[in-house]
Amino acid sequence: MSKLLLLSASREGQTGYLEHALPMIDGFLSKDIKKILFIPYAGFAMGYDAYENKVNEAIKAIDKKVTSIHQFNDPIKAVEDAEAIAIGGGNTFYLLKQLYDNELIDAIRRKVKTGTPYIGWSAGSNMAGLTICTTNDMPIVQPRSFNALGLVPFQINPHYTDYQPPNHNGETRAERIYEYTCANPDKYVVGIKEGTALEREGDKLYHRGTKNGLIFRDGEGIRTLKADSEVSWLL
Image 1 (cartoon, rainbow, N blue to C red):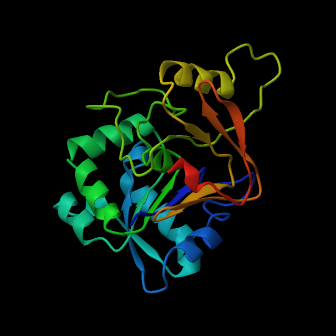
Image 2: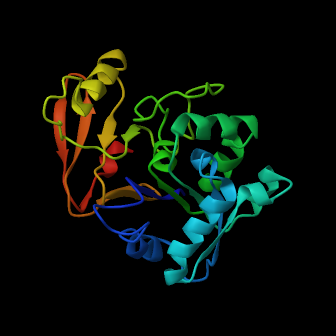
């Protein structure tokens, strides 16, 4: 019975780091869970210690604490012993490469499928989808595979936006996702906007927040993902 909270981003607008997400995280985790295993690989350029400290500074307001997986001698055992798992944002390609290099893909998948809560934001949310092919990031490294954790049976595009800067002649986000759906006509892509999240509780899936998202699939056009609605049919 999977229990997932997949946040689009660590910030909404000018809010502080994870500030907008704290009520969702606090409601998602049971009160007896105080310690969270944090996987910081996406934020490697910041440094793992700095990333761990940044997250701890944010979540102390809800009486939780993270310990980064890089502090453990045996990362697989750290996953197996975790009360909850969180994967933060950064570069999705680097994150996935590190998960493969440390043989953590199957370990995390097994652990989450037993009911251990999983929280992701940005790259960490992308990781919960089938593959990372709908990330917004540059492929700065080459992971063993593009296949991700597969905790939901669709693709995720965090930070989804319709905004097109003036005088920008490149493809829009929707056009890029359309390309993916043309090449993969059997796959759904869910675009979630900043400030929103997907929450899974077993066979139930909800879109949390006050902004609508979008659902893309070849031959079906673009559907509106209504704010604060149930979308369990995607499972």
